Length: 279
Image (cartoon, rainbow, N blue to C red):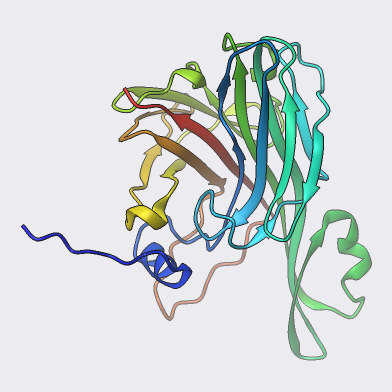
């Protein structure tokens, strides 16, 4: 069979491909991309990119601000980043893994989106929760507000996987590994638990997207749904960095031409990065 050759090294065509695939409704993907998720040696360091891209792990949109950055070491104590830098397309920082164990690197924040009418004209607003009450005009009508709690994170291990950094934060949406993240291999299964404010969240759809879609030409997305314990499993199709995404409540599917329901008062989102090694 003759293979159809795709020329996908353009943002436009990549966007069109994504538009044809399920769970591609999110126009951009926020991510933390470590240089590796497992390190050895006497003086281990990792470099982490923080950005928003049309595809996972592509630096074609905006940098992520590092205001909400937290790094938790294996002993549960905070670790300071080093050599932080924010450029046009991405932020970059280094992390020294001075103690053996797993480090949880996360950007956690809360923002607000609002729509309203002012003097008969429809308006939209986006900003911090703190600025919401100050910047929405007093004369606004038909005001609808959604507050979004977001967690963007990755786990990096020096030597032996484990430690206090892997404990649930208990706030927001979390996807926690139930097996060592530094031992993910293509063709093998991994299991996760999803928590919302520290409690298992059943019947939630989770998407796992491998990176480098621009060179592959197809998304190759894997989806899973949590069980009654808030757990799901996935068998890794091939070696790659994977972007894990979930949001709650689920986004409604609206037929073309039909009105969209009112947005929820609060939404929780999660975006994580894991690395899968070849066999």
